[in-house]
Image (cartoon, rainbow, N blue to C red; front, side, top):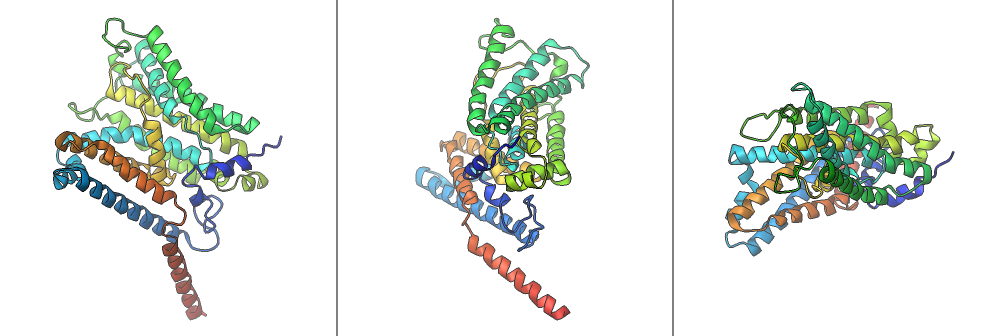
Length: 396
């Protein structure tokens, strides 16, 4: 059966900030290079320059805003940009915040790479935390095995939920954007129903679950901080495996080819169904695992009362990483560092931490603007082409 997905994919291009990168005529069908025109190293250098310029512009404008609203602007800037590196506690706070951003950043990158604008990561992250909490309360397993069993269940649950928008998109060409937004509230409501009606600790003074089994809680890297060894290992493994999958396997090539051109993928016999459905299933698995890791790292019982926001932050991380899992850890570290720095600045000087959103907004606007530094790229391409022409003439 023929499923025409090209129309909606084109519509999503305006929403997906990296769509222009994937459809770059200087790149091959998978968006990695190898096509006609400028070689891949020019694209890589240009994207690096573009990112650095966007960061510098964002920081400069943020500094101007701080100078305008703060009585002690230099002190505020010092706390924001240097504060997270001044003490081990602050630095571990950065790493603790970085982990959930890594999971959601990879999750969003997987589906965005296929031009599937699926935002279910927010709800799946919350639902994965609930599934892990229930498993941590109801099961008894040996220490070391127990948390990973809970994380596995959360990942499987996330994969099932992630498949829903993919199946509806492939079968009936339904908008995955609308479906995923609605599923976030379904995930939240179902999770809160389960906790409130089946696992709520009525002796506690809030809507929280019973305590987890001690064997289900992940071990800390350092006892007095909340960063966990298992969380770090799993986050690193997810990034590595996602990168190898996307850039070293034929399934990953199908996903990226679909993101570059859905019709090309179909007419060349590549697996469109896997690109549409499989990318969203894998995204759900990663987001569910991220919720479980966060729950078993930071808490000893289920305490969330609202959506965490990590799924939306994952969109920002994916944009910064250009949908490449290899770059997600650095993008997550950058965003986490800014968030912790803004928090320190607010507590020490009174400048609201929302100032970090100025940097985020400016960077996103500049990175998704197709014409931003376009002349610079043109000069780089011309310079490289001229150099290659001279070399060819000398050889001849």
